[in-house]
Length: 135
Image 1 (cartoon, rainbow, N blue to C red):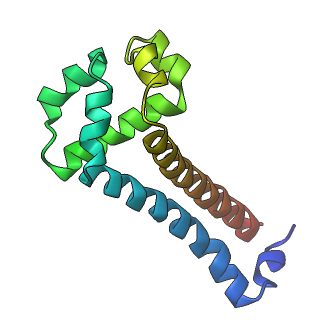
Image 2 (cartoon, rainbow, N blue to C red; image 1 turned 90 degrees about the horizontal axis):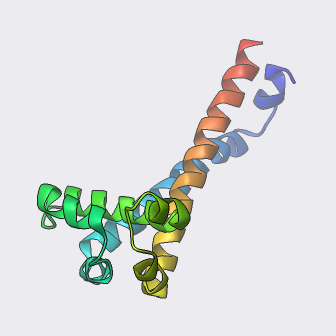
């Protein structure tokens, strides 16, 4: 491919290609922030009482500030993305992860995947454009 390939696109298509990953990624971040600041956060914490890691982090980070809530929510989402790894490493209890509320699990996983997909698209798209322009 040559640089002319990318520049031959309609400007609106180029803008959409570059802007869409931001929209996807920021919608995931907005969903995560909403979950961290809503009443659902208390439900998440109450659902994971046996989690050694969470009980260790809560006094350190706290649960009142939005940064600490977003951090804790992100790490809980990571544990839900890779449950076998988090149970094997001792971060989470297997029974609690199985009994975690389904509606919250779904929302957290959707928010995580939106952020991951948007970030991947952004980095891959940027790398492809840089490679095309340098040729």
